[in-house]
Length: 318
Image (tube, rainbow, N blue to C red):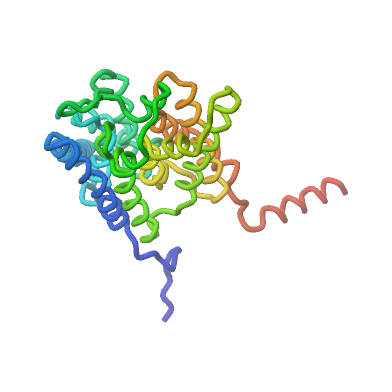
């Protein structure tokens, strides 16, 4: 007796749920530090973001009569990444609105997990930034200055590298502690949830392009300044947790390299020539939009296509 089945015949043991759980665990250190650094309002924003994303996904699937998928933890991860990008001074209703845009508009209206054309959490963050610019750029908590390290560097002021490593400065809930972000990123690499290719190329190219732009502009470039750029803002968390999104990043190795270089160039341009100090979210979203083009140009030929092409050309040439 032969067992006839449809390919693939060898399946990976990992599932969407297990991947998302690992990503959620990797986000715990940076979100936990955000709660420690900025207080209970940050914890409230995290819980509201996660609960809202789960609720909107379940409600949309119920209305559209689709299977309920909230238990695959993808909505949980979207809520956590959205919370990473919220200022600690945000209100609960902003978290709800951002979650609604991320899940309903960006994810579910395009077919759900695997069909979204850009990172849902970043789309929600950008929606809130455009709609409530003042609130989304207010980082003052308990007397702390609202000026972020990137804003200070934009004014020509210096920032302490140790403060950037630890997280002793203003910023979004999950972006301030480089050590906490690196712990989560290294965990994902060790667990083979992500490849280090996109994060390393993205971070490295961003710093390289910033150095080139500043040299062309006649500005001073020092190792301390470039390291501060790498540790500031959303670059690290964007590199490990957002640019590596399975759905919105290229599959091929060549495509991943091009993608990482492209968003690195955009981030450098936004940071050095743009009107705002940050540029990670917009860079990754723009990169998401060009992923189909990148993949169409870097996809390998199916087996036999190259040979068939030569045969066709030989027949044409007689």
